[in-house]
Length: 433
Image (cartoon, rainbow, N blue to C red; front, side, top):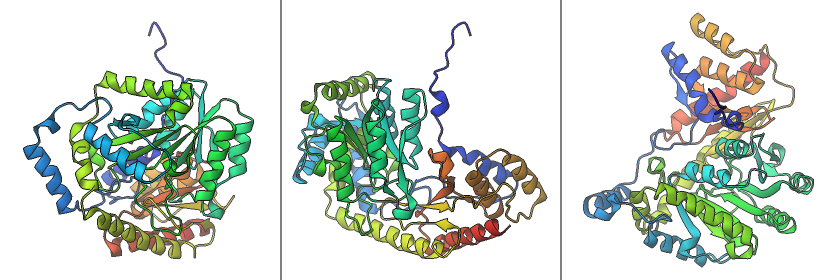
């Protein structure tokens, strides 16, 4: 082309969670039944939508003509009023409906939050990372995402000194990202850790982003602590949505909450830029916004959340009790969200390890496919070819740790336990080969 049209940041746009599907589809063509453990979609894994939630949505589709039209740019006013009231009842940072901005899912929100930052302003995030955040931040900065370490040997707790040192010696860092509960590890940030992160942000005049999409899916020893409740006078953004707990990922309905915009003129102008950018899109999808207050305030919603969390807790317990017996890996017990992460011991993976594959055609395909791959991704490919189980390598999540993420989404108890047992057996076979 006459002029270079390639943005220097595009090489940072990776999403292994869906990228690995291409290999799975090729294996399916070769006769391998694939058990998809790569993506956090409860509906795709067979979750049944509660009838009373379906009834609310159906009634709005049938009787509420306004749900077919545009919403205000920030979102349906009654819904923003409902969210602001709910958040303000928690104590902590107080917000108004105008501090809330709806997006077409948190993927849309995340893209905008990083796109409209000054290119020289960086946001440091957890490692292992959730690829939507790390890719969007890296693409915005046109270089690798800056991360702080989560320690698998301390139940995935963040290394506070790592955060502090990277903030202290990198003046381009303008914000700190937390994902709470965390994806991909299932860790829930303790209050004391959050307070330390807020203290760092206050000391170095930063803002904080908290992706809280799994806020209501918590089942471990740590209680969920919202950003709003501990942020004090520090500027911040919380991200919430419908996709995981209703669950309704296809609604593509998420929102951000701005805290303390009046405390800093620059942060206030940045928040306004996000609203202005949404205005160019007109608005986000109306229907899920319209039904949100009725779903969240329903007298059965609390028990719905309790039931979900209890189901994930039981599966987290089984996965932990199975995988902790496997030598050569560390697999902390998930405490929130619906993921678990397994980390191989340092230097235990090699480039000549394999798993048994019955089909010569499948074996030949995989032997070619694994050439030059990171060692954890190599294991993941062999696992998929040998057992059909598709998990996500941690190397695809902006991490130098060698491991993989699995989900707790399988609704059938026997099938879930069989999957975890098969993974455990496969790890032992692979490390012994």
